[in-house]
Length: 275
Image 1 (cartoon, helix red, strand yellow):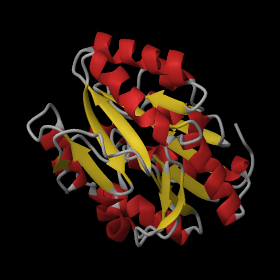
Image 2 (cartoon, helix red, strand yellow):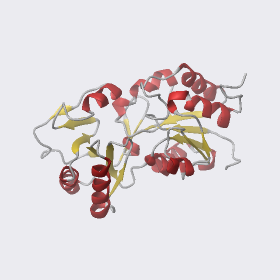
Image 3 (cartoon, helix red, strand yellow):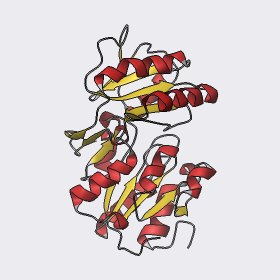
C-alpha cells in the first residue's frame, strides 16, 4: 500500500459508482463533495460512451478528463474529445465476423455514435436507458470502418463470451484489447485503450504521481487501473479474482460500497456504519 498523499480518486461507474438502478445515491454525492473540500480530485472511467457519462458531471462536479470506452476516448467535462485510440480500419470487419461467428450480437461505436443491427436485440433497450440515448439501426456495418473506438459483442451465454474472447485474443491480441465490463458484454478496443492507460493519462495530464492515485472498481477490466495506482479498492460485488488484485475491499454497490470506501480508505472519516 502506498504512503503517498492521496491526490486523485479514479472510479469505475457501473457496478461501482452507481447501484443497480444506476442512480447516484445521496451518500455518493456527499463524499464526492468531501473529496473536493479536502483538495482531492475525482475522475471517472467507464466502458460507456461519453454521452453515457454526461449525467454524472453536474451532480459530482467533475472537472477532470473523463475516460470513456475504457480509455479509448478521453473527453473533457464538456464532452469535447481530448485523446482518441481507434481500432485499425482493416481489423473492424474481421473482428465483427469473429464475434458474430461465436453467436454474439454486435454493437459498433464510431466516435460518439452508437450503431446496432437490431434495436430489439438483447440488452439494447437496457443500455439505452443506462446511457440515456438510443443507438442508430443499420442494415449492416459495411460502411463503418473509420474512427471505430469500440466494438461490443453481446451474449447472455458465458461460453459464447469466453469463446469469443479467446478468438479475439488468438487473432488480434497485438492490436486490440478484449475485456468484459459486464458478464454479457465483450468490449473490444485499441490495445492501449484500457483503464490502466486512463491512470497514466490522468497522472501525466494532471501532474500527479501514480502512487497518489486511488482507483476503485468491480470488474475484470478494472484490474489494469488497480495495477497502475497507489491504492486500489474492489467492490464487494466483484469476483474473488478481482478482489484478490486490490489493496482493499469495500461493500457491494447495492450497499453504498463506493461511499463507504471513500470514507474508510480515503477521507479517514468514520465509515457509514459507525456512529
